Image 1 (cartoon, rainbow, N blue to C red):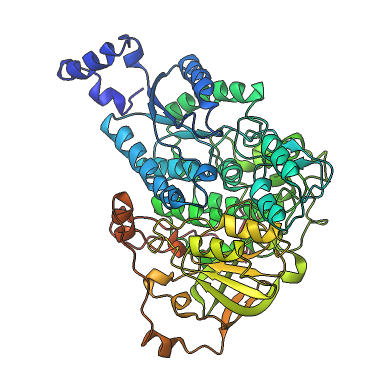
Image 2: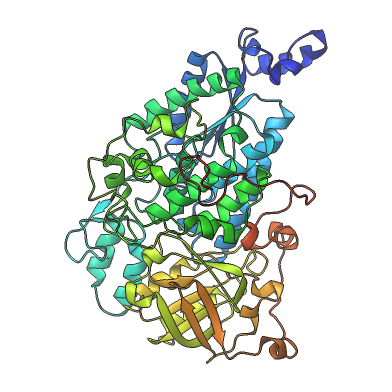
Length: 578
């Protein structure tokens, strides 16, 4: 087999390269096989990534069994939960770019033949997919899997018997209002997350694992396997063997993650009630694969897809329930009539072939299309005079009575100011909280307004207050919220010129977000925008990052037009509907 690595490992002219590998302990026989990168984001900082120390061993064994040679290198993997609510959150989205850059540099510098991507949490999976799309090699992703949920039957705000890490911040608001005791709050801290793994609800981490599987770049049925289950180690071995087969058959990541595959991911995200961050990440993955896609196209693909899986924060189930119900294959079976089933997967089979023998045995967890949890799906793209380039919300996590919200604006120049105001009781029922200057450039780094929304929910204001921002939200957020408002304040977007008391109308049903009777043209003449003193890597990020409506990417090539997907938006099961 002629491989990329063999170009620098064969012949006397490349003896120096072989010598360096032999210094690592590799034999001549191993250097004659495909060189497969194990890209490992293991750390003891992020609980979602602790599993990769053991999992990578099984992956290497699988690669060897398949006839390849594993070479391992590490990438960073920051934890959103630890970075939440302070300066550190500004670094989280930029790490997505750092991860992609690292993979590109290592794969190209060493002419590696294939990639096994070990990543689990929020920005790590999309960063890995972005890097893999750039180099366009055979690739398989293995996520670390969700943690086991905590159990709390009495006073459970989600209505079931399970809880997850996200309940802690919500409980801070409840503690402040005297709705729970100090003892009860401490109990939640100790029991909300009883094992390693990504948080047990459908946050961005588990959303992106599910969408990677839906797009065909993971072995089927693997995204929701709990981190502590032995089955996950078995999947590592199987994935290791399969990546060598992909190299032999020259199946590359862009053969799998096509525009239609991303469409499948978008519709799966709508059906599971996935994270709003999926919009940002799928647009970025599309960009790195040279696939033309807009935020409004994303919204169009979501239309008509109901919410089928009631997972925390939009229901009472956790990823453990989803796993036991059959996970992504079962959900995709329910969605089969609205998916592009001819798409190839990392198994070599098509989506349709993988779904042939799948059966839904737990319809209370994964609902059929005719009996949805909510008729409106998990993502809605809004547009209006406050967001002419789009904004993102999550209807499945918004209380029914707050899907249309009208109120007076209460303006905060950043997250810290907003948190102080909320904790001091400044926010009242009927307010529209505006947190601005937190976009990709303005943050910089587009931090999540997770804490602010969780505090409001815990204070019983989740359906009585709407929070809008040019920043992001966590996949675990619920309540009435709108993020990714574009253009952002730092780019002169209308949100920069809102004033306290302005009337704001958010209509999720109609897909609009408007400032009522506001003359933005006149205000632009008189109002200066906030400027921040930015240093270090965030300075370079702020100088170069693009709009959230385009995925919040740093450009990696000259802008060029590329033909889009030839399949119309309304098609189903890979067939053209005229």
